[in-house]
Image (cartoon, rainbow, N blue to C red; front, side, top):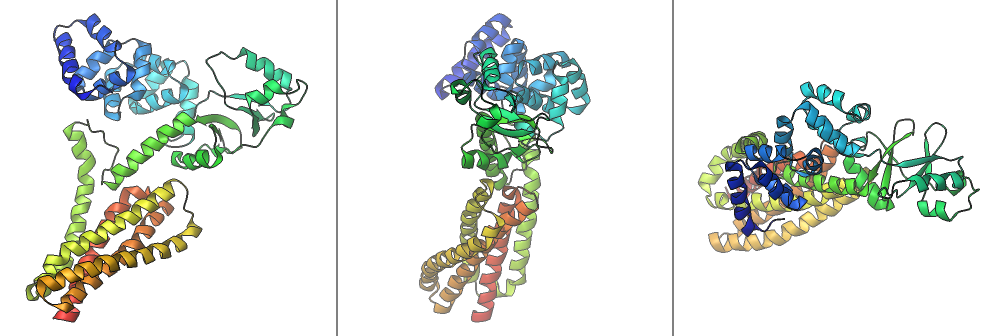
Length: 445
């Protein structure tokens, strides 16, 4: 990445060249930078300058840069390109990157672009899978051989492979293309040439084409795979997912979970224009407003209690905030465990009891300290008891729903990170207020 102190100088240099309309100088200067620096600049530049600079690049340079820029920059650039240029870029990309690119083209232009692409048939076949599925991130760059072939046949095919191509596994299929196992290039090169590949084949874990991309991650980590074969509903090998693609998925899913838990509907770049950021954020803020109004209704119901004992109002934010914090801790652990495939439904009961026990202990520890503060502040031992009990109850609620909410969301095929945080803070706010005010009414009024 460009050092921050140099960004202004680089931007000024580019602006000067753009103002003087020195196309060759602009291109030479931009292309002299590292790819990471080019990406950084494109993502930071205003819309018009993104388009201007990108238009000066060759097809190969465009193809190298466009898969790496952020979502907003890609959208702006794609809209600025004609169908002929887009098809040429797609032809220069790896098949999985080409599918991603064409998938970002608006539907009314997509057929026009595809009709000009050399690999239109393959791209169309892969576009029918969702972009977030195993097939959506797979590549067609793999080597497969029939199990009845000899090692000698495999050795001959390996010798014909271009040096820049490196296959981690050679997949063994039957006459119908069904995956049966794999062998390594080393095993082929060191085995007797008369041996049958079926006899050398080892079993390998495969994934169905429609599997969610997030579920590929634990398979790679659990089985230490360098590639994951993707099969159709008949077990036929149709592609492979590389480790590089899995790392990209991990980054994407981690970003998505963090932003979802922050209440963002879509993945948002720091460089989105204000209107785009507003559209992404406002729906969840409205939902949060509704949840806040629900908490306000609870407070309004106990208005007489607050008037009679103002100390309850002072400690309401404390009870709600501590419950929310405890719940977020539990929620973060469970969402991560679900994402990595660590938690199965048979584990939920044990995890729930464990978190309830932890919630009781944390509630007791926080409650005792807060009770002492309430006692000293208000000089009323019973009020200290009320505050302590309210904190314990809210920590228990936070533990209960911190486990159940993401599990229920996952069961409903909804990303647990998307709504769990919002619902959890609503629950801990409402329940915390209710517990404190109800206990105050029962014990002190």
